[in-house]
Image 1 (cartoon, one colour):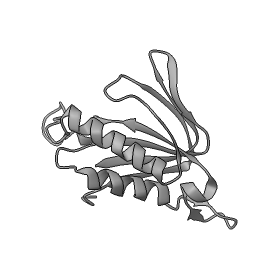
Image 2 (cartoon, helix red, strand yellow):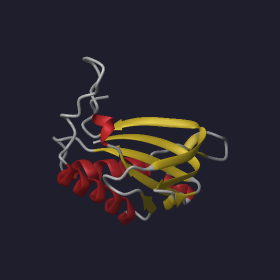
Image 3 (cartoon, rainbow, N blue to C red):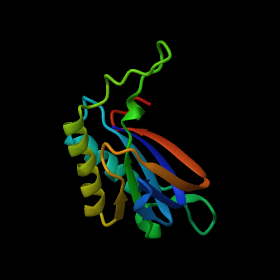
Image 4 (cartoon, rainbow, N blue to C red):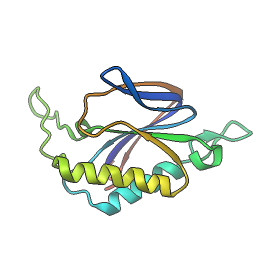
Length: 149
């Protein structure tokens, strides 16, 4: 599983002009599922994101987690994180999971994050979405459950 994690002061996702998910202080996660991913990857990624210490403490150091600050999570499925553009000009998506598996693991990620005590909003799987955010910092991290980067 791959994720782009952004600390935000607010973020939202719209589908056909209708807002379907919105958070204030928290984390926006763009989540891509690979064909080798399993349920353990969803659990690992949810725990990693929820416990990342990327929020400022009293000294201004990134030392607090989403749970520590009472923030929310906005999860948006993004298979293009598995796009391979190393050859040619058109990305290849052969490493992305097939839709049924990807959707199940995306939902598993959301369920696990909720089970850890986080309020989670989300986009909709396989929908064309418009994502808006105010990146706080900016703080942006790339995560990979297989630790390939």
